[in-house]
Image (cartoon, rainbow, N blue to C red; front, side, top):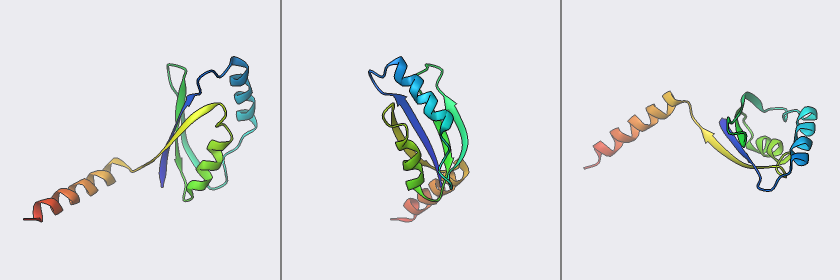
Length: 99
């Protein structure tokens, strides 16, 4: 399953705390079983996104927990667009078949 992990810097996080988050990030490694496909930082310098593949969402929770004192996280399960389009077409077909 793929997830998009979004984060924003927590309100009132100091520059020293952000520096600490970078020190932790330098030593951090993803949980075994998580495949990070992409890491992106927002241009407004207030957060970022990661695209992660994993069969165990608890591994994503483990990775997020390491940084939760610095950032607010949201984790979204996502589908490839072709898969979601196929599902949407099936739903339209089903609704059309109901009298």
